[in-house]
Length: 111
Image (cartoon, rainbow, N blue to C red; front, side):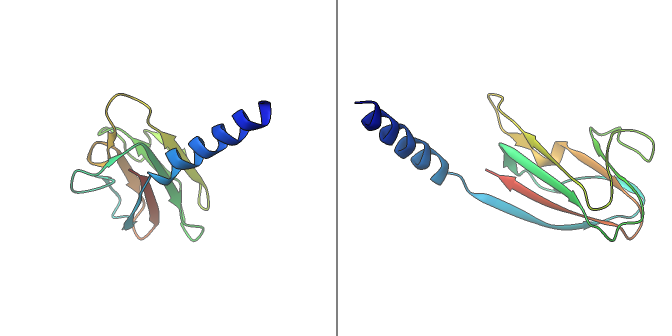
């Protein structure tokens, strides 16, 4: 009986995970300014931000007041994953990054 429940639980987990889709946003190139992760409304339950290894400075991320000395940091080559389990998904238009001029970040979103 325990094996039947284990198999059933595994099947349900796989079914739940297959319903997810991923959106990749084009790399964002820094201009030494604070910008949203997306210029349009993109709703996500998980977002992953990766600073390219070739970056020369830390990337800052957070709300609209994110700046060169404000917000959480991602070192070059590092990444941060935010899982959003609130009643409404996260809108990438409301999450901001500060990226040094010429540096880049890659963004992936699970919808």
